[in-house]
Length: 236
Image 1 (cartoon, rainbow, N blue to C red):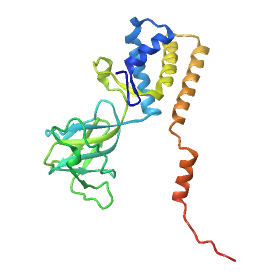
Image 2 (tube, helix red, strand yellow; image 1 turned 135 degrees about the vertical axis):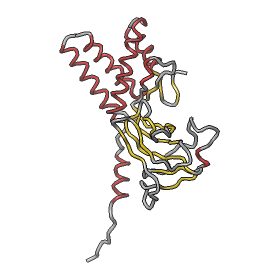
Image 3 (tube, rainbow, N blue to C red; image 1 turned 90 degrees about the vertical axis):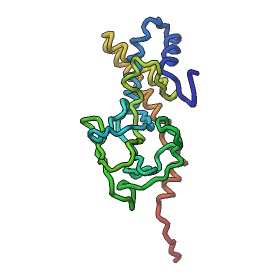
Image 4 (cartoon, rainbow, N blue to C red; image 1 turned 60 degrees about the vertical axis):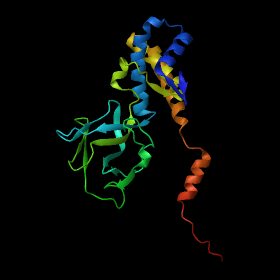
């Protein structure tokens, strides 16, 4: 299926775009590469995509490499003694089932609040190594399984030649169309005025997309009332 739960594949989006604009399918590879770059642009700066991943600790140097599409982590835990030892404040961040845990339902695991949680223990540690694109761990765990919840770029590095197509939210379709039109103009050395016009259209589409995630007036009111301090009214 092309769409599922508000998502559309990049291939389905491009085929639809080609039909609307009248582009020959022979240019598909070129537009697919531009589309991947557009998804990265949107995912990193405008439409953060959060996902889970299961990693394995390399016991040679006790490290675990970042996923290809990793930007930054939100929560991280290591399986230890049949429980999840969490290093971050969000110690219940894991979905009930995540691909990569063989025959196990993560809902069956208990959580042990680690150093990142209020009142948590400090028996184990991990370190983030952005330069090496990896996590560093100590050697005390009974398992080498790590699970992280992280912000994804939306595009894995293998997706350029992968049989598994990437998906993105349907509310980003307009922004993607405008991005492709803008980049094609830039790459083809189109007139500067036309490229600038397309860039402005892209920025307007991104702004409209981001406005969808803004809180409503009622949500702002509820937040304000929930955070305000109640005081006694003194009668004269």
